[in-house]
Length: 291
Image 1 (cartoon, rainbow, N blue to C red):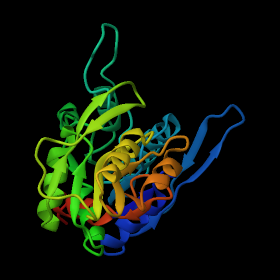
Image 2: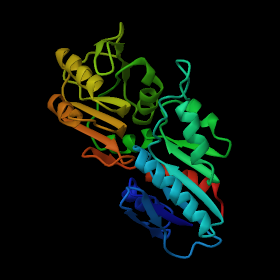
Image 3: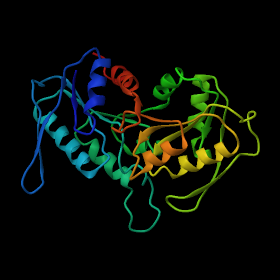
Image 4: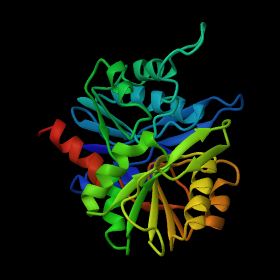
């Protein structure tokens, strides 16, 4: 099995190759033509081999690169192509809200799987997205990666910033054997929310080392408000953790100003990257591609 790392996920791809027993690892050659179009070329002998492409699709450019890499791998004679999309862009639009809208998640699933035999992604916005694939598709979780890191820290309490993350924080609490609760959230607009404590808590909050757990941090508004609310009620150290750290504009700095530590997994390169999902992705690849 060969592992190819796209420009959006080179470091993670190399980690996955190590988890797969130091599988051959390569980085494609890329350049831009004068009109801005992308050129890619993969090297090495791939005929008759299974090839893993690792490429997050945060931007449109990342997506085009992934599609070109898939075609290049097929042209190189690969036996099977396994596509790993750690961060699956456009997944938030998983249904039509108004007439004339596309179901973006479905559209991207159709295109990504065209030259793929199997697709693996991590912590989709909605599990329903997997149903749009017609080929085998699997979702790894960032929770075990974060839990492996948190075991090395003196954690007392886990918090979800809203009820939508209850299953996520509950699973984390089970892995770490820690108490948890979810905040009540009322969204004002795309960047502003109102948060409050739930009616019942698992115990006193005073001086507790607390971790706020989320799947994606985008603008940081929810995390900042959650940290301010928890501080108001006397918690001790506060950390913020997520699978996908987008950290748009000044989000990372704003969160750092109200927390003691910020960390994410390595699905997207960012300053908070401290936990790796490589073991969890490699486990799926080994399970689904027996030699």
